[in-house]
Image (cartoon, rainbow, N blue to C red; front, side, top):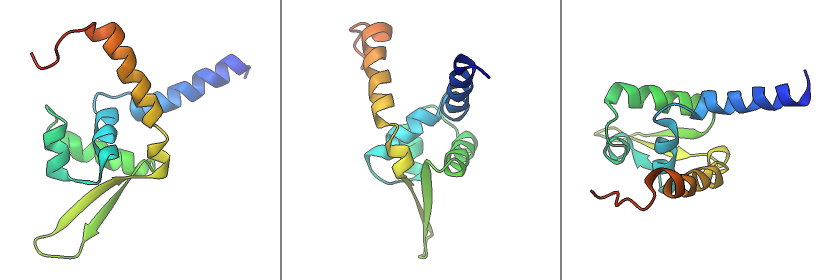
Length: 111
């Protein structure tokens, strides 16, 4: 495998984890502070419960977030970003800057 093929394989691996419609947005939401399921669902507009559950499980399996269950009634679960997940913050910041420059081109996102 040459260097180009190796780099493409590595990029594909990263996109397999983060390239779906929701993962980056979920991680960005949790990056701010630990959140409960309902808080994540509210902050990630348009995602349904089933998809959110699947994406949270996949992100946990990849070691990007942790799930913490509190032993209380009613039960409470929080999702937290891991140090591995925090390393993605510069990537997401760069993506947002690129989107503001090339995708939205000064459009008011509140419209």
